[in-house]
Image (tube, rainbow, N blue to C red; front, side, top):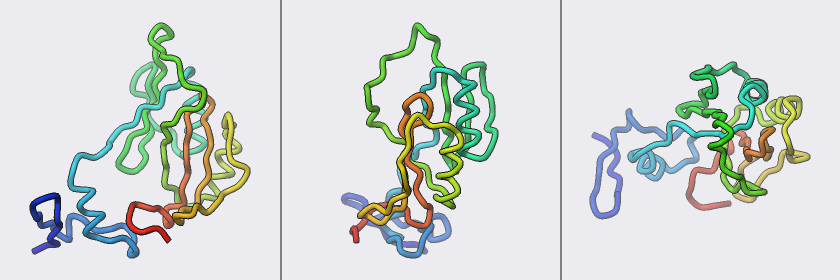
Amino acid sequence: MGLPVYLGGHVDFLLSTRCQAPYPRLNVQRYCARMSGPRVFRLIQPVDDIEIAVAFYEQVLGHRGERIAVNRHYFTCGDVVLACVEAPFEHREPRPQRDPRIVYLAVEDADETFQRVRLAGPRWMDDAIETQFWGERSFYADDPFGNPLCFVQEDTLYLGGPVG
């Protein structure tokens, strides 16, 4: 039938064929319960120059993406679209000195990605890849417009549960 999952007051059954944890070390019930609600499908990345953004993200992500409009370019990242959007000058909002919103990207090879990001010309990036105390192997960088990014080795993703 499926896996019984407790969801705040009632039990739902998730079919094991519909929801499977991507890595053996993940708790299937916990992972599938998280995947049963709304999901993020698009993130807007505000940019000041769409052409510079496209050049940066093409090199970092390893694919060309798709121009949707004169000021909008989409890059597919798994099930989520990273949308670079250049707002008209009169509609741009001031950005904080250090934007707290970080886009986390799972990558197959953090070492290769680290080199691609460095070559793409980020505004800032970590000096090295580090393993965080929760187990993720990752590094941080800012795109040319100061948008913070974190690149995480896919087989070390932390998706909840006990740390350590």
